[in-house]
Length: 279
Image (cartoon, rainbow, N blue to C red; front, top):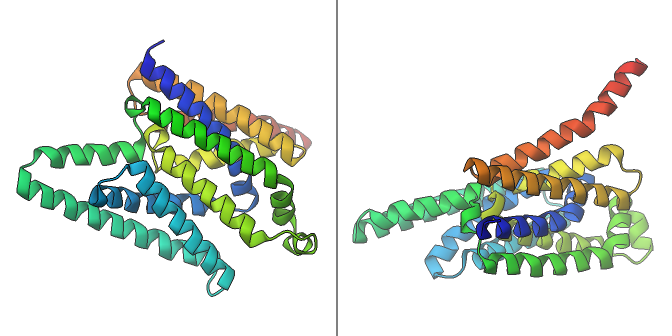
């Protein structure tokens, strides 16, 4: 097996493991739009990394975490509805990121010719849609480390997060702090977005948080079984999608998402047929 494909498959496995429990909470708490908003803020992180000259992963993790913390604080203040706040912050971050990147590229192009302008554009394109050829051993190690941290946090706070999701008032009486748990969940999602760029791209990461969890929810009888099914579906989508993308020389992100969507249809179809027979 080629080294770059092996690295991509390992990275995809780590990402699927992280996305499984987080995706379940995204579906339960109806946070799909939050995932898209994080992706928009990630573009601002790319601009920040270009300005400061630091790792794009670090820059995106920083901006996404700040975005998540700011959103959590504003939601707690209850000044506006969550969807309104998401719309304002997401589009503001997207606009600032696009303007900053455009100014940086134009400024560099004016001073050094057009070569780096084209390369910068290609790098940004790979961030948006992913490129398995750019995955390095360092990316795999960072994903592995992040997976350990996120899974440990999910395991430790699992019961409290589930209780807070079901009934916040009951969670308060049990000594649970929903705001604190919300911050942890949002920061974990920000970390996944930051580290998944080279694999599925920041524009399609939300799909991998939602589709496997939505498919698992159709058949799962309890939260723990839903996480297990989500993990199985996510890993299958990653491994099959990445392999197909490598063989067909296509971008990994669209292929992985299409495989995940196909699995969702296969899971949904028996339920639909069963309900049709009962009509």
